[in-house]
Image 1 (cartoon, rainbow, N blue to C red):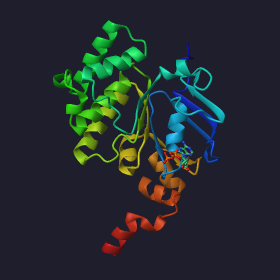
Image 2: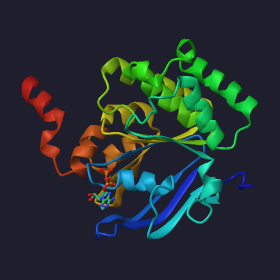
Image 3: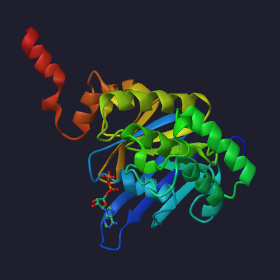
Image 4: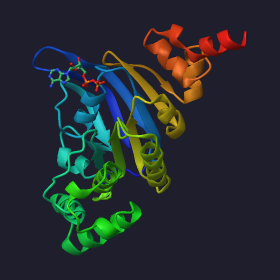
Length: 260
Ligand code: ADP
């Protein structure tokens, strides 16, 4: 059993070099405490997906360590995997399954007993307001329902760490706010969350701690306020602009120009 005081996710000096020679991760270290809502922000190509793929067993790191609740996620992947739920960026539902089957099949994959699968699926369909759609094919769901079902599926085997890879990319504002509501609820119930997003407002609103990643390395990490202080600016967005070398785009310039 993992130690009680183990970190939810501990990544130490993680390296990933793809066969084509691209060094996507160049010594990344992050620590996520149980119960944290942790954000990972960075420009395209920074290494966010590679990090998530390494932490979920979809990619093999070329160096470093990953521990999930104290389990070595590289050597003992099976053990560590059961503690992790992944809600991927793309809507990858099987169109030939109903909502209920989507959840139950996922539970089966994780070795849950039939009765437990049925009960857990019913509970999650209720939580995500999908009970009325239980027997409907996933094909018949609206975009918002699909996103909710993906979250429910990620939670089906009761993972203690939920990884959300750009859960609100390209969704409208109502759905974005609705998803925020759900993920805050999940976090409040004790699930640790790692979120990647391009929306600074989203990270600001949801995440207690945030790491900036650029060019395969962690450039800075801390609370939103700490990151602002680190770059000597007033908010997270300006800190991010400083990270990517675009301080001149700060909205404070625009506002200052108008009110001056
Ligand atoms: P992000 O998710 O932050 O946009 P990625 O992890 O997708 O960044 O990519 C990091 C770097 O690794 C980029 O230079 C990207 O082109 C490269 N990369 C990603 N996946 C592969 C792959 N399968 N093979 C080779 N290079 C890859």
